[in-house]
Length: 188
Image (cartoon, rainbow, N blue to C red):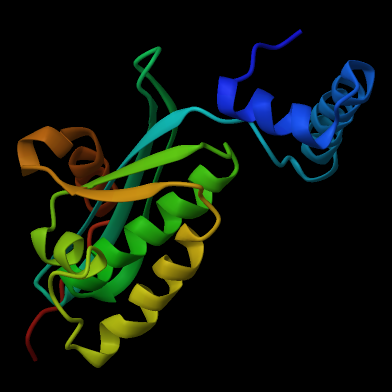
């Protein structure tokens, strides 16, 4: 049987004093989770800590923009998932927020107990941590969506990292922008 944390085991014993009832409950819970995966491609993992690295950028600010996110399993040190795409014309800050939104949507499929989000945008991290207010009206819907998405995680934190420590996501943003360069127009 799966070994559970002591605090969870204690709670289960309170809810289900009989060991057979406890085991049946846990078995059914796991089976429900596996069935959910089959139904909608849902979960790829249950529990644990996952690291999310996101980056967004634009060439021109505003200009052609792209986002990227990388989900990393810190125990095995392997990339679980990566995503990058062009998002059209936008600012760096919009791209940073949109990258985080996409990353949170990817991360929820893994149902981590703890999600640590690493961003190289100090502004976005400070806004999400409540140190700065979101003054730009255009950013408020993104901020609100992120706050709503984080409710799906038992624990979610936002950490500022230097750009050089976010190299994987940064490289994916540049790859998205390089693969689909913006058109060059000749002046009439």
